[in-house]
Amino acid sequence: MQILTAARIREWDEYTIRELPIQSIDLMERASAACFDWLMENGFKQNAFTVFCGKGNNGGDGLAIARMLSQTGHAVTVYILEFGAKGTADFQTNLARIHQTDAVIKFISTVDTLHPIDANAIVIDALLGTGLNRPPDGLTSAVVQHINRSGNTVIAIDIPSGLFADKSSKDQTAIEATYTLSFQCYKTAFLVAENADRLGAIHILDIGLHPDYLSTITPEYQFIDESIVNAILQPRKKFAHKGNFGHAALIAGSVGMMGAALLSAKACLRSGAGKLTCFIPRIGYEIIQSRVPEAMCRIAGTDHIGAIDSFEGYSAIGAGPGLGREDEIQRMLQSLFLQSNATLVLDADALNVLSGNKALMEELPRRTVITPHVKELERLFGAVSGDFERMEMARERSKELGITIVLKGAYSLVATPGGMAWFNSTGNPGMATGGSGDVLTGIITGLAAQGYIPEQAAIAGVFLHGLAGDLAAAAISEQALIASDITAFLGDAFLQLQESSTGE
Ligand SMILES: NC(=O)C1=CN([C@@H]2O[C@H](COP(=O)(O)OP(=O)(O)OC[C@H]3O[C@@H](n4cnc5c(N)ncnc54)[C@H](O)[C@@H]3O)[C@@H](O)[C@H]2O)[C@H](O)CC1
Ligand SMILES: [K+]
Image (cartoon, rainbow, N blue to C red; front, side):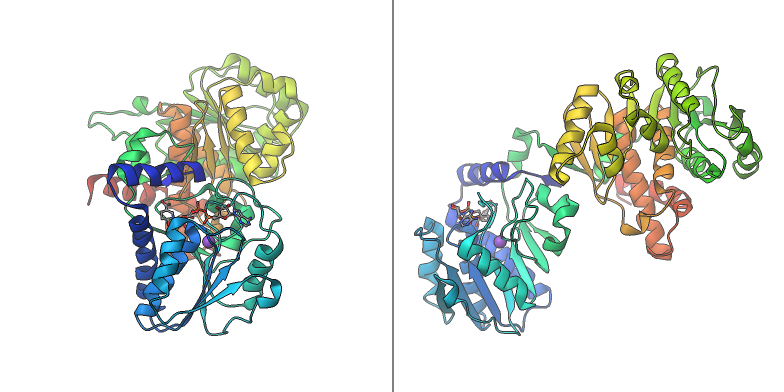
């Protein structure tokens, strides 16, 4: 599934009209028919509708949907918001067409012409689409607030009116939709937490835009899905031995935080690493040896990690879970950066130590994956005003430092040094629980140990982590899910991926 900007969508629209070929009014008819069909197939067959239209093509869609509803016996009232302009050609064609039906048509030209909305009607929001070029104000803003206050079910066409498709709409008036029926592809606006209350349930409808367009562009954002992960993961060969799957190391744990080390270690092994060595303080020795017998242990420090004399022999090293922030940790990280040529995966306290020492940041090797959550990212690179700026910051820093950045969130974002940014499509709110990040560190380290390059390990890692979490939630509920369940379902996640690749 693609994630495109408003400008790209316009280009795709034009490409389709030129190459298919199809007239733009017929493309609008297709888009509207897809919405009408969705309404009929999803429980709105018996309803009355109130349709709010602007005078651009989004409004044109609204008029065409209203016509289809009226022609199939639904009571339909259409409100057209007067912007002053006369409306796009396709809007006007659909205005002429709807006059042939029984739909009641009214114009809103001042706030005095705003009438109460029929309490039983389903509201269709076709005021503004991807053509939004400024925050709604004046009468437009009043109409949006009028709809939001109504308490009716609101179905937004293409995008809730007032939201920009690909930049921040924070603090501006926008429709709070119950459903968003959007055309052909995701918009970045659908993936950020700041819009969560406005989008409702999102359904992407196929309106038959020309598929060849996609091979002519490199999209700025992409979804990580099964096919992308299956293209990364290699099947195991018949005569493989543990030496083929690398030697991972984890530097984790301190007094009271050995659980973080345990969670990472188990997840690392379940991700397929051939061997695992855990660097832990003496306090955690028995815990790790008895709870993860598959792992080897090296003691460094007493209550927390101290100096480590050699980092040699590991293909990937994960550091951070439960480490603490003592000065020795900073020195240990410095020698890790200098001495090791393994892929590094840094999380939690390793990132906190980095944030407090910008000089150390300069020494960060390029083959590094960092996995900050929102706050950790800001501590590392500075404060931002919102989700979009934060995503841009992750992309910029990834390019600048040559590292892979996994920005954790509802849709985790993987920013790679080549400038690409990948949104993860798996995961659920049940995973917002202590230790879930430690499991992710273990998974990415385990994959990197097997020879996957840092960005592949990060992309496959976030997907597997989310998929295992989804399978765990399906089995035991989001509420009851704890971090070790994610690891427990990793095997099922691998199996599901394999089945999808062989088409079983
Ligand atoms: N994706 C596709 O291929 C298809 C999309 N369709 C629909 O077309 C809209 C985009 O239409 P467009 O005419 O470009 O823009 P809008 O309708 O979103 O906006 C209309 C108009 O409004 C003005 N405007 C912008 N911001 C404001 C504001 N804050 N207040 C008042 N007026 C504003 C601006 O000048 C625009 O001209 C897309 O979303 C789909 O719904 C096609 O129907 C099918 C193919
Ligand atoms: K809309």
